[in-house]
Length: 590
Ligand code: AGP
Figure 1 (tube, rainbow, N blue to C red):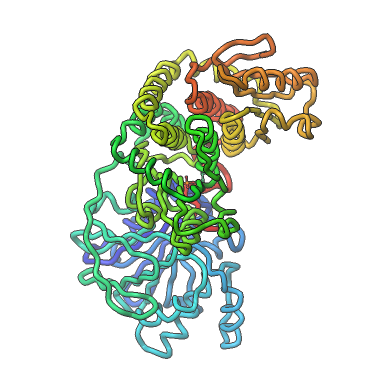
Figure 2: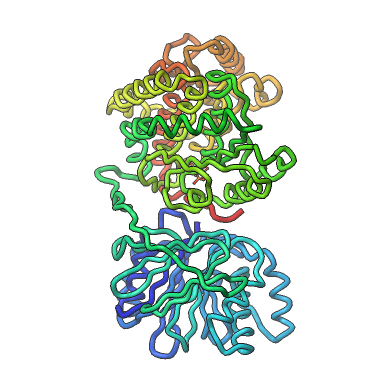
């Protein structure tokens, strides 16, 4: 979702670095971009719809030491140049970039209108420079004016503000991430570290309710509410894989699918002590809740089955966006387990706040150390999948599933057995993802790519994987795909089946195999083209995608061919699987 970049210091290529910084945040998903820089005593800017990848920052400005930039994912107002950030006050002396939502922007707009302000965009963001201007008139101090404006905003947000007559960069956050990069020639402020990793790996984290003021030489952290000073540690972040490195692969999505040859084993090779500690916390909790969004949510849903089948232990899944409605069930002895690849998902952060307000402990399973969710958790387990850049989550999902299954085994004293099973599964996946297998899936994509509807069924842990299959196919190929519990077909969805409708059947060699095959028979009787994903063939399958028999880890192996299929459906339909329309990698708004 939206990306933020800011720099102030003694370097004169601030605008150039802003363009490059925004390019490295492209993976988050966006539809327009903009940069504002200080040139002499005024602010210049450039805003465009579309991609920043082909832009040369030198064409903007080579002589600026202060710049802010933004990639926008539209929420309030369409994708237009006027709605792109930075947003300005009327005389363009104050510029603001913003992530998140000012929930009370309508009220602030009407208040500012009565004071004579006019607005040129449909954004909630535009109230910020106007409000700051009002407080600047009152106080004569830019940073103080930003603080007073921030005290008026409700909702989750992160902003960067600059003023034409000041050499300072002012930033504030409540709910959306902002990280400071401590560089040799000045300070960077960004929504994610790749934006400045080419310049520094020394960071300081801004926490919720805090603001920071810097002129490139000095830096001051303070509390938005009280203005009281805060102290911050400097932290060295590890050297990560270059964000733009997709090797010989045409797309990040394919690279990340192939990364699963190693990433699952990395997720499994956790400290056994840590897994045991988590199992103990679940054992002792009076009610364990699992929440996540989208794909991560499907991992949580699969974990309900892992905990039921492997450990006979009851846990409750809720999509993070629904979790606050469960607050009556929470007490201080409850445990919330949140699952998130990015560690920045707003709905998950809100669920955590709900749990914390009841005194419950929060355990997070993330892929990004140092993310907002990691830092707000009582305990964090990292799946170690490595950077995931494609919007479609693939290797993060299998890492999450592996860790959750491992915890289920640990809960009943069978950690070693679970680990052995998962490492064997990882090795079978390594063998499975060979060129012949990929070619087979390319051919299958070719056979079904012209269909506009596609259905996937599963039972037990394959049911959440059917839902996940639908997400994967929808988001990259734009085919209308839906997943169902196999047994639900006869209660309605079967009416959708026509002659030749492709239906994918996810199966395992387990006690529910006869049930899911009989659901497949019902589909076939209505003319469906049956694509079986299963360790064994069956006469009911028109197409058989063979997967290894992985027992209770079957969900992990079954989803992988669907990821590959979704990828080729996208490519063969002429879509860019890495940058699907309307979607963002980090969903930092509710
Ligand atoms: C997955 O392919 C999606 N793009 C999306 O559903 C994603 O899983 C969801 O937004 C949650 O993200 P997170 O794991 O970073 O919290």
